[in-house]
Length: 188
Image (cartoon, rainbow, N blue to C red):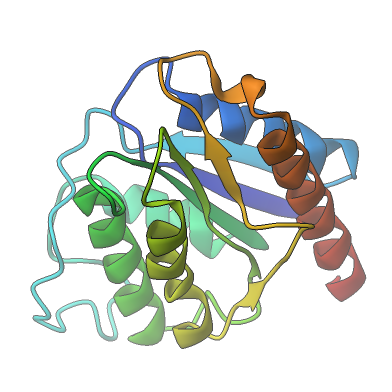
């Protein structure tokens, strides 16, 4: 069965980002594709050091748990990273993860080629569009298919548990999840 990996970039236990990913996951599953959320919470993801040790081996030399996530992504048909916005841009750990995932793919079997997905961002007031643009850069450089919705994949939320109050943002994420599943099924 086709599968999508959703990567939660929030360090909080009951984060709005996780709440939004759960909604997206359910939409994907409703449309006949399996989905799994993996969290960076509690991990200390390091930045790529461009050592090229991953080239030909398929594994990153930095041992912080990202290789296990890479293996799950390698087997998937879709990939959706999501990040909270705290200071106007994506958290450093999720950007480090994306850069290393891309480096491992490009230096080996290009497992990201034709993978379907796109980023989701969650913020209280500002930084949505910059973060979405920053995270979106990951997709075309890795020969991936970015899926759209009826607006950008961003949700406005402040205190934990408030993400569903942004009904428009939630509807955008639901349609995005549905579209990811539909495109994966068409490609398969």
